[in-house]
Image (cartoon, rainbow, N blue to C red; front, side, top):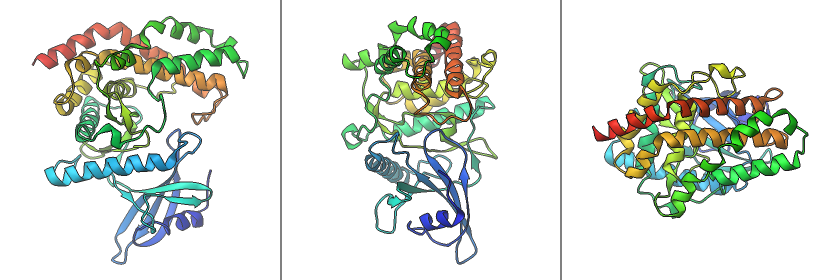
Length: 371
């Protein structure tokens, strides 16, 4: 949904922000929500920018609960940052309330909108460019998990049931294959065979959780590299963003998803799968950064399962992309024909690369942990 400049100003007028609206533009990124960057000028001439974002209610069926989770998590983090003087480069993500005091505005253009501060001098990366970026991103996500490690999970609600329940994701794929609503199964048999041959691993983490061997925590659940703001000058991580999926979950899925998104040299929709590779130096940098901030609260089993989690979440993400492709591309935003299929193929190529290097990955984790 694209809206006019005047409409962006109208949205901003309902939030408790200062200044005169100057301009606004749509941010063409992300699979789910609609995002605009708005520029304001204060009375003293200072320029401030804000992010206005409409929540995709087709994906987040309980948007007000999503906002409650975000408010609780950001308030918890900001209180600890202030008390302990801990930060990600001196800045944190803040919600600006509506003028009625609520954490979002409801009903504008038929939707639910929220406002965040725009963090200047930073950018996000879809593909990690060097090991320093990988290390910094992992350190930021580990610090995020550490900051919320004492937030009781009952304070944060589940907004997408079964979000990282790999067996349920697998079952939905099987159902999509059987119904074949869009007559696409015949074109993806290679991908189906790859996934079904790995059925035995899909339940490993949820089985550990059910047996009490893993701990449910407050987790981010979408730890892509482009959900960390990186300082353009120093390559230091500044802030973790995109908290829509914050809810109870497993820290291992968060770590694995970071490996999935940050170790390959190409974007997750790269059509040429020969370019896909799990780069071991990037993995090592991520392990070092993550454990530097997260090791204090992780259990020995969680640390041992770090390499496996990367393989599993890559497989799960490939399953999700393929399922959406078979169901008619209803969940992820697509920008070309077979976009979700390309995304699936990239994930499966990454699974294979991880499998080829899994022993080396595990040896490095054990070596680091013993050090």
